[in-house]
Length: 383
Image (cartoon, rainbow, N blue to C red; front, side):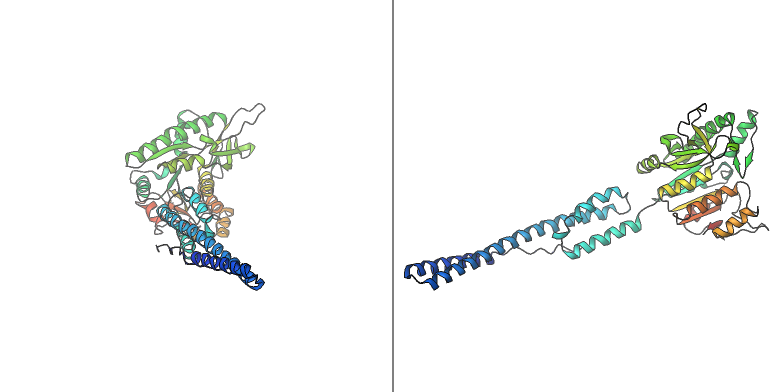
């Protein structure tokens, strides 16, 4: 960083101004003594010139002192800003605004240096990586949770969104509660809603948090209901209390990230009091759709869906490494993409406008998540 260009203030102009005033007074005195009007006028003119020089010198000196102070302060700001690179924007915005308010006093080269640092901050700003996992991807040889811990230790900001439909189905069967699906989404009545919330926000969420912590990570569990993180509404009358996302309030996620923890989010939604004869304020919301909306709300760097298949496949079972939006919709309409893959693809399509990378990968492969983050993984990228 360049040193401030600071020049010491000189008293030469002040002395010159005082000299002119002194000479003018002498000339004025001589003119009055000799009753010489021309000498009087010359004396007054010299006095005026001296006062003008003195005033200009005083103002320039004040300006230079102000600029000197501003440049010193500005360099302090630059040092602080340099230390902020990669940290949350709120920590730097105040200093940026304060520094820019001094712009008129700051050397142009310093203003340019400041803006370059500010640009560097944005280029290096860490953005969350939203990872959606499900019970089917957490087998005996799965390394997903180890990968998540590794990402945290590398300085990344993973945000875990989980489902657990398999576990929910197991518990529903144990309790003798029937269940059905429409386009890969569970139909939820009042009885099954209680099981869904208990299993996802309770058992599955806490198992994942405990597992991440046991691997050396720092995780904290949330649900879409906590802090009204996910506000939802009933999707359609024939889906029961299965909801869709209306709004994501990411403040609780940001607070957890800022505290140094990995948010582990069980999907589910808060339904504002509907009134009437229906007091239910909980919703079962598809985890894939929730992950997509959370990625959008966080302006995530990546959205990665982990599955128990290689990725999106064509009608012959061949993996499609890249998939355009038009092709994806065509495969859904032609029933080549079916079941639980539908909400994953739709989630990628929804997020791709603001999330730079959306992927569906095979979470059963060792190191699959780390490879995907490095751009070396397999699976399907939705373009």
